Length: 503
Image (cartoon, rainbow, N blue to C red; front, side, top):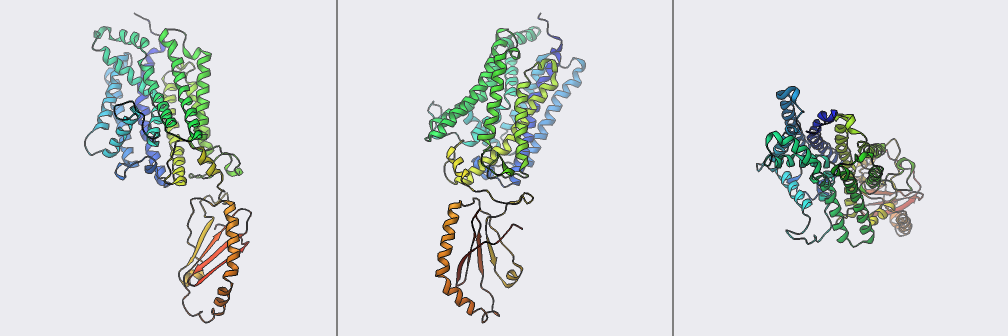
């Protein structure tokens, strides 16, 4: 019988990592839902959800806690029962993993109206579309680009590729149970596993799905800029497939370990840096040039506060991307701990990625309105680049309007100077400001007589209730401010350089 290396026994604990990563992902989804709702992000719109399909953060949290409890009962119950012999036989660990997956699948497929039934059915439909993106049971391409929700789910699966690989190994063992005697099962399991490409193909499946989605979007997109971006995105996932293939070849052929190959490490580093840059620039819309210092290399519209959190997110994403490469260096000597940290860290990186990815998609939806959204749009970048920044103080980071309406519905409102503000989703361009000022100047002449008449009648009407009026103030960088007063029979416009600062 083949002699196993000394640290081999502890590696059986790696089967705990997959379920722990899945449970952590569910817990992270709870945080995603809470933050999106807190900041008013219309994630249900960008994901094409019906109102009854939107899950609640509390509901997902309960599911995550239940899955953590399930994992604890399965693995710790077996450890208590077997004592010192726990973890010695890999086949028992595989059966525990299969038990976890069976229970999790039963909860997902449960036909009862519990645990967000509509949301679970929504996820199952979208998973089916990810696995088979073609029309019905044919190989005809869909008539439109890949929807955002399918892209979002497939990207999440890439962070769980190691769990998918472990699951395929467990299924391989289940097949071996029917063709081998129990006493020969362990030896056959080890030898068959080394010879089978199935686990590596299973780990590649999420990347194949994403590459296929990118090619479909490439075929169904008319803009040349967008088509080019879809090709670049396809190359990113192909580089991930290259890393898996280069790592699998020596393992299947019984050659030197992949982490000792310079070409393998070069492919892994290239993929990590490529993916990191794509995260920042394309998936998050950050890294825009020619911005003020306080938002340098970020973007014009930022939802989360303080702004420095975006720099932290970029740094964390870079570190965790590099950790994915570092795990290939002698991870067998580090034992289960580093492997566990690396797998869970990738899930945490995905949860952080979700925060900014959905925020950026919501911003694009608000800007384009009913216009068809594509996954990556250079035209959109040009639209945003022309938008002036809102000039607010560094200490007062809450959104303040660049154009606001001062309403005086009654005399007390006039005395106190109460303001009712309407925040604009987009700031006008500087050239529009010049046109507004020119129109305000022309209105001065046309409304001059009305203003004079109103001044003469002021004393006669001082005891009467003042008619509701509205004052609209428009401010533009480097331009005088324009004010439009309207209400009742009075309409006047002036342009003065008043210092109106946000309170």
